[in-house]
Image (cartoon, rainbow, N blue to C red):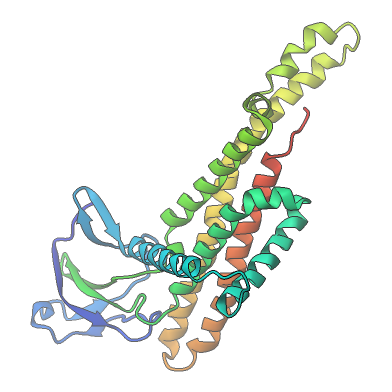
Length: 303
């Protein structure tokens, strides 16, 4: 990734509300006296903060690492404080988990199947939910530095919502789809699962059954090509999961920024509550769809 021509990281700069842009803001720093204006534009791509060797660390990646660190701390704390008779926060988490498993049962149709998939699905739900919500916290998107490129000064935040970056949602979608396929291979067997996509059994059955049922020469090749369409469907799942989550979170970021431009004090608050609800819904949709993919993958289908 190309490096900026000139960058100033000396002093962190806070620009108000986490979603409030600073467009054409007059700066009094001598370093930027020549440019005179500092802009804060919403970018589809996450902005680079620093590099470790050839690896570029972006503000969205930093935010994602912050979520991972938070979840590790909470998990260790909960594990150490577990008691036979739950009370307090442990009791609350058990209620949440039991409700989530009941919802999973309505998809899988079996508590046994739900228990196999639940740890992975619930982890995705919590990870996406915290990423969605963390982007609304004060300081996320509002504390950063001024970067000057070709005479144009722009504000770059140190942190930005993880799921507002397509790279993050795409990685989550790939993990979900590949994980469901691996789970399917383990559950029904590699050969049966392979024939779901490349139905060699359908082609191999034509010579032996042609005399008894001549229509097999038409039906079985169709079954084979349906398997090829299944492969395309797996790719479509990745696109669907990633773009849906990214689009909704990024649209919320744009909405809050636009509202903050109109009036930064008070007016964005109702819309922030709306984004809190949207964050829950999008995390739930992502987790439920992943659960559906796992359930379909572990079902032994005859072609």
